[in-house]
Image 1 (tube, rainbow, N blue to C red):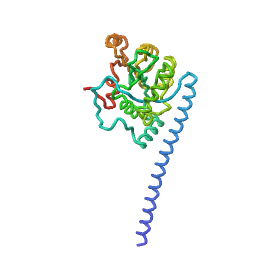
Image 2 (image 1 turned 135 degrees about the horizontal axis):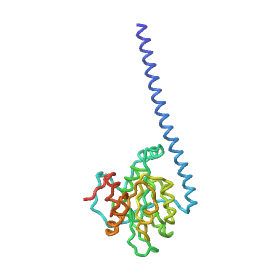
Image 3 (image 1 turned 135 degrees about the vertical axis):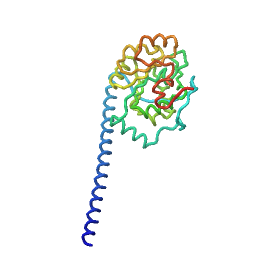
Image 4 (image 1 turned 180 degrees about the horizontal axis):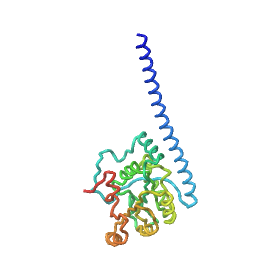
Length: 259
């Protein structure tokens, strides 16, 4: 009987030790992820200070209405609501741990459109379903948003758009970068070193200059002009060229498809 009690006590002690070891291991993993997350935050802040040397400023933005939409999405959740706080925390941990691949996207002529013919009087709006696409891309990738700013009014309007679209809930505010020139944008993209960059140019260029300067393995070029698209497809065979961002491989990869 005494031996049985000893066996039970020994077994209980072993189980207790095992549970303690498991808890310690889990706490160590969480502490490691948190440390990596804090380190990445410091790296982003350092990059941000470097960006100021390139005359580039950081911020974010949101939506009016736009041209396209015969587009469906495989998930029925509301496009107005981003991930929960726990999902955002996990996204941050995954980004910090290097588990999410980097993507850069230039918003003008891709996600944003400007029907105004006067570049001094911009009238930016989001393409239909573009807000939802940005949310999904920010979940799938470590997303950096690039905006070629032409005037201060340009920046103010886009910033207001992003704010009203609640994109700050899903996109890291420090990773929205305003650029004053194409040279600045190229340097930023090369510094970030993404696995994919999405380009659409800006009011005074359709993106061709960026295609000539970028040295990224995978580039997606949004080009609305059909004649130019057909022509450039013969000269830029390694670049994915599409008429609309919702018709691209990255949109399909996160659940978008056109009907």
